[in-house]
Amino acid sequence: MVRREREVKLEVLASIARSQLALARILNSVADVAELAPQTAKRIGENVRLLTNMQEQLAESVTGWPVRSYRVKKGSPPKPWLRNELREKQVRWHPQVNRRNWN
Image (cartoon, rainbow, N blue to C red; front, side, top):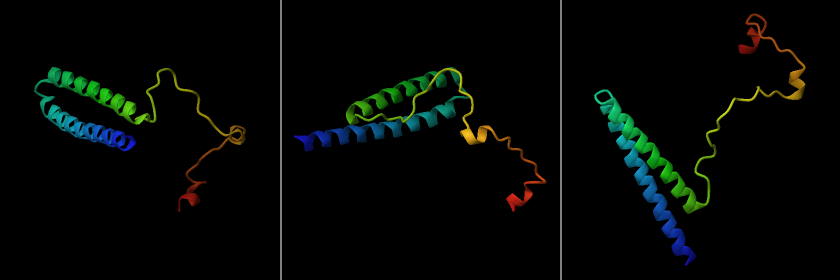
């Protein structure tokens, strides 16, 4: 039973991969059409994006793993992070002084 379940999951994932290849071909065709019919290309591109999101959700539900290791976050970015020992030092770079480090 477990083996058959794994086989089915692999078949679903293979199907998603084939579908992604088809979507890539569609996007190539959309690039050709974009100059002639920008609104149509925009709608097709949006549909491809929606299909891709659906495929990601399906793959996540089949595998139990997140497909993307990141999620788009909204908001303002944080300040740059520096190690504590570097925060206290002021590092300056000058081409004449640091030239020997580049050779």
